[in-house]
Length: 417
Image (cartoon, rainbow, N blue to C red; front, side, top):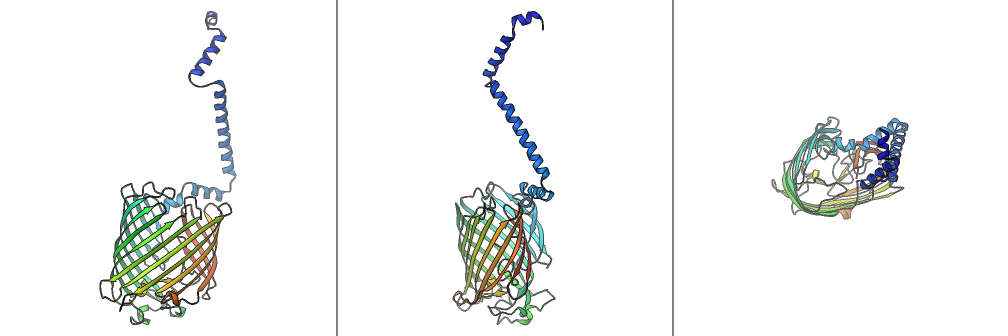
């Protein structure tokens, strides 16, 4: 720049022009300095976070990555697309897995899955819901009417049976096969945390000899006269109301609140006319947290009762039962079965890390022909570990004692309640 330029625009004029431009653009020298300071602070925080991540143990970094990226939810319960179905075939199925698909939109949802187990159990099911649940989650719950239709096929090859009543003997263990075909629907109304509705379905059952070679078949050691439903292929039309209230929020893995459900179902035999009956269920669950929400107590009371129509009976495989991985865990699955049942459970749970929790539990339950005839409660207790993300348990390991029938080690892919 020449000397004449400095004469026309002296340094003081340059400073005045720059200041005016800053005012016109809404910036001031102080604001610019603050912006640079904020950027520097953000960069320091980023570097500090990176250093913290590097200093964490490898296992902890892996756990945080799994939790932050919702990998378990995406692999085992994705809201859209293909994922893996683990378990949920039946209580006696053993380990099972298969493909699953889900698509949700504003107008409708569709779910489809199939799975097989090491005991040759199989299941295939599909459901279609109107309206859809796109945008709904544990933070945002829908309101208004809905309709869902579903179809399911299950083949259960070796269901355990010990006889009926509270006095059944563990030495009388046998097995039977049971297939089920169901087509039905649910219509209901959701309002805040509550839902009410009606279910209806057509379902067919077929019993046969079991396939477990370690024990006799139930069809060989019991008679249809003593065990209703051991023979025949009954089909039913079922219908009945339900009501549900949910105040628990799983969105932050908080064990606060409750889940309370009551239902009544009428089974009308459409085949032999021998097995019409009514059944009601009440399931009450309460969750309490403390210790900055890292510890909690979970309580459950469940009861079910069936009442046969005049001259009819209740098929044994549709009667309530206790025992198994989601019931009195110190006993084998289906250990006690009768027309009425009561179950009481409690767990003390604490978080070990982002994906692992521990639990101490106690279970008690009983069966009888009528609720007023319930006698001694069968009990068990134990400890376990749960692995999963913020939306629930993906793997559960329990060790149960106290039944008098040996120690039980249980591996399941869902929570007990």
